Length: 233
Image (cartoon, helix red, strand yellow):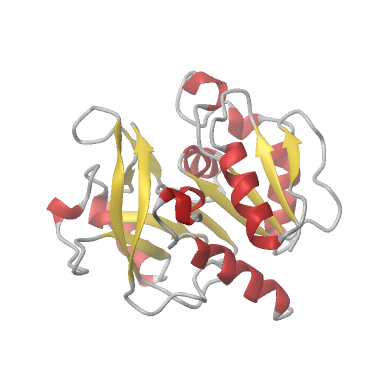
């Protein structure tokens, strides 16, 4: 599994992703500067990490979505390559229109940093094949703009197309408004594009991939991706 992590000015979770993927795969992980014109050859998975790209200037993810490297990321996605945007990376994907919707300020209007539980809505994507249907997992969150928003009609269409992959839930798996840490509509924590090869996820699986950190559910994401690639998709 060949992984490339894009680094923007202000990224602060890039090394977390590099360490998690290198530890999991046993292979070097490429770090790609935002100003580079191309991704390394044979890249299987591109990760847009969390942080505050360009200091969240103008809007979260707005400047990063216009970085030179994003043309290569778009081509990678259009050709069927896998792309995972985590936290700020999710925001970048919506700004780049690789995913629908937008991420608004949390309902509390404060930065929220804590563990949270998620329910897995689909297990047939490249990112979720190692999960069980409706499995409840724990990933940490750390964001100020995590409230996923789409107009009601477009939200209905998103649901009908099965693009919601993760929802905030109680430890028992109940999806109720109080289980959402940020007010995200319909408790949406992660979505894919229609093709299923681009995932935006607000919680951080890379911070739940090492027993030293007390959480290992994030390993299931990397196991899913590795299984998908090894299966010849």
